[in-house]
Amino acid sequence: MHKLTLKELSAQLQARKISATELATLFLDRIDASDLNAFLHVDRELTLAQAKVADSRLSDNNAGQLTGVPIAHKDIFVTRGWRTTAGSRMLDNYVSPFDATVVEQFNAAGMVTLGKLNCDEFAMGSGNENSYFGPTLNPWDKRAVPGGSSGGSAAAVAARLAPAATATDTGGSIRQPASLCGVTGIKPTYGSVSRYGMIAFASSLDQGGPIAKTAEDCGLLLNAMTGFDERDSTSLQRPKEDFTRSLNDSLQGLRIGVPKEFFGAGLAADVEAAVRAALSEFEKLGAKLVEISLPKTELSIPVYYVIAPAEASSNLSRFDGVRYGHRAADYGNLDDMYRKSRAEGFGEEVKRRILVGSYVLSHGYYDAYYLQAQKIRRLIAQDFQNALAGANRQCDVIMGPVSPTVAWDLGDKTNDPVANYLADIFTLSTSLAGLPGMSIPCGFGQGEKNGKRPVGLQIIGNYFDEARLLNVAHQFQQATDWHLREPA
Image (cartoon, rainbow, N blue to C red; front, top):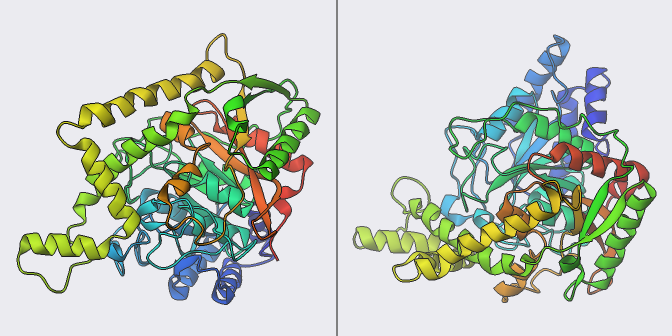
């Protein structure tokens, strides 16, 4: 039962072949037996109480398609009842008095919460090694990272500890862990999913999205989690849509843009081989490959690592030890309490980004760094529009690798922050432009010690083109079985 998709689980529940309580218990038992450190907080009593309500809705024929289906939430979304730590000592043991909008939406749909998932501290990282609670292990090879910051979400779905999970993507943190763990994940257009109750890292970049087994599952989850929220000033006022409406459309004549900048030096041969094979499969499905150029790609790393830390330094100033969160036990005065609480509560990577962000926003450096980065950000977005929009558009979607390598070994990049940053080279530009992008499994490469490690294919579309992306991914998954492979 734990191997079924969301759609298949929904059919089992609707046909009364299994109850929501039985299904939740099955997954809770799997979580208890796991050694991946994917979950930070599980409360069997709370989960089974939700399952009981779902069973009541099912028996009263008052159930939606997702009613009774289990889901787990990245520990960046606040939840009433479950702890919300953002992977940080700063929020260790914090329990929110309210639910994030995304959590509210899934509760309203009748989904059953299994618990909270491990992540890099305040979503800052590419390997899930920055969590105060220890790293999550990649279920394909426990020597490897699962990717970050949503490593717990991707690992939980890959290991079948949960059929679906919420995640967030600031610079690739849905797509990259989905790639490294061999599952499907999508970052929708910026503003499509409410950020209310999502602990902020970089407000102009953070975007929630789902990770699941298939593109169809991700479409079902997006149907529930998107929509306007007046409590979020960045939320877009758009009518609800069915993201699964185009899943069965033919790919005949689809133009796939292949950026030459995504296949240069730095891309591992095993990753390139898997991605090239996937592109060939799309040609068999009737699509046409078109070489394009995204010339500002190489600038996405310096631009991102100016803008994101600047916004983080502002957002994280609220964690001062006064109202909630960690407070130092021994201090002399208020200033001393601020310094000691933040020094003790934040990890090294978070401190590094706060310092960088404060520097680029400081007097005399704002124009030289932050303002220049915002100008280049617009040029990066324009590169995509030249390819995807207008009467002279070159392609319908863009494809390439998600990560330049397969998952690296735990500890390999711990002492080299720049190496971690470079792992996001193919995902950052999409986030800076606010475009939708997703990762689907497309093969395997070899780790440094010859472990079998997944490779993901990235699919990028124009604004609000999620239904097309999901259709493209779904057709590939109907023709291949990479998404059905699972770790031992």
